[in-house]
Image (tube, rainbow, N blue to C red; front, side, top):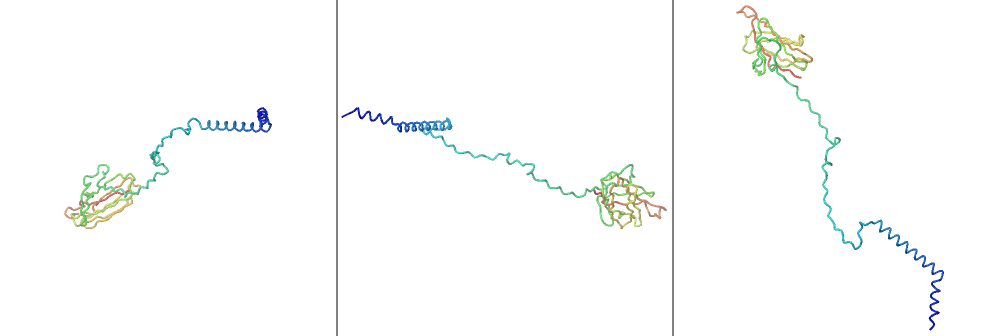
Length: 226
C-alpha cells in the first residue's frame, strides 16, 4: 500500500484554482449572511422577545368611555331660541292711575259704576259741579288707545245731562253727551299724546234750584292700552 501517493493527490485537489475560487465565494456568502442577521437583530432592538422568552401576558382591553367634552354643545350646534311671541297689549285702568295736580275731590278713583243696567267694577266717577271741571293724566306718549264706557249712573235724575270732552294735549279727541240710560262706548286713538284731559259740564237745569245742577257721570272700566 502506497500512502504517500494518496496524500499528495488530496493536497493537489485543494490547490486546484477552481476549488479555491468556490470556497472563497462560499466564505463571502456566509459572511454576508452573518452581517444581515446582525443588522436584523439590531433593528429589532432589545425589546423584542426571543423565541425562548416567556409569553407576554394578554391583557383584555378595557372599555374606553366617551369623554364628556365630546357631547359639549358648540355654538354652531346649539339650538336657536325661538322668537318670543308678542304678549297681549298692556292694559292699565284709569282707576289705577294718579291724576296730575290738585284735581277736584269730586272724582272717585275707583268705584263699581252701574250704567244702563250693567256694572263696571273698575270705573272712575265724577260729580261734575255746576261750573264744570277737568281731570288730567300724564301718559308719557306711551299708549295707543283709550277704551271704556262713558255714561251717567242709573241712580241719577232722569233728566240729567252732561257734556264730556276728552282732550289729548289740549286737542279735542272726543265729545260725548251723557244721560241716564244712554251709555257710549269709546275707543280713542291717543298715540303720541303726552297729557290726557277729561272735562265735564252739566247741561241740564234743575227747575227746583233754578240753574245748572251738579251731575255724576262715570268712565266705566276705562283703560289705556299700549
